[in-house]
Length: 327
Image (cartoon, rainbow, N blue to C red; front, side, top):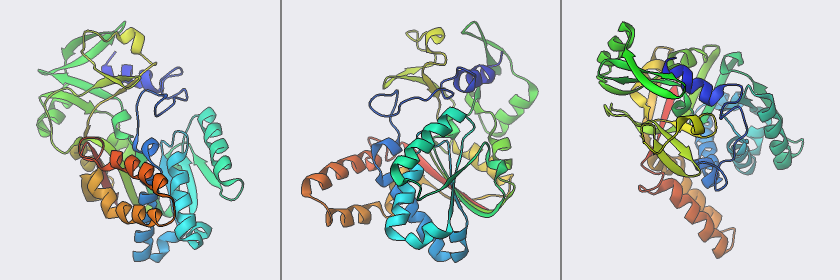
């Protein structure tokens, strides 16, 4: 089978990695910005409020998270809106895009533990189910979880019994690679179809965080995460039969491909920048300063240290990027 089918089954099959509820953070395979600090979600919500300040009609739209895992991010955003602009909490609708019922149940339990019955969060199995005039959609590390093909010297990877071999690539793959100046590396599958799923949202701000670059590296970045250890896919120490469906598999995002896919669906790219630059623009430094006035010195120092993880160039600050697409 082509590698993209293998990766899709690895992540999303009946026993796939994401079909089962995996821990994120110290007890899981990897960290995310969401697990690092609640100020990550709060700063995104702060940016949403600034957009509402520019266009008051947006306060009657939807706040949607795609790939919400436990539900921490959307809850952190709702909490900030409640603290700063409770009137918006009364007019805005909240939703999660999630197709797995057992994950929906876990999310609902967590949301209830945060807000009781005070906040209603709706569920959609796909973003194409959402029909509305406006939605602010956010995702964290979603594009790196799309299946991909592996291209090398005009050949694509195939997998048989967890062993990789190479066959001549089809002509359409070679044409795509030539157009994007790719000789070797990953070709994400599904960006174009995903972008079209936003069709029934009339106006949309889509904010997504992920790791990757705007240029083509012409090298493989695909890797497996196991208990905070990283193994390149072609590492001799990695046993695919053992890692398959039990560990996370991911690769660097080609943001030019993301931009192209969404441009074809009527979106314009407003911003592409490092996570550190975006969060500072969203107001995270000022938010931390206000927090310092309301808490103890020890609590402030602990939170500031967490935010350092989000902003430091040697940690998540430069490695992760944000793309803001709008229609």
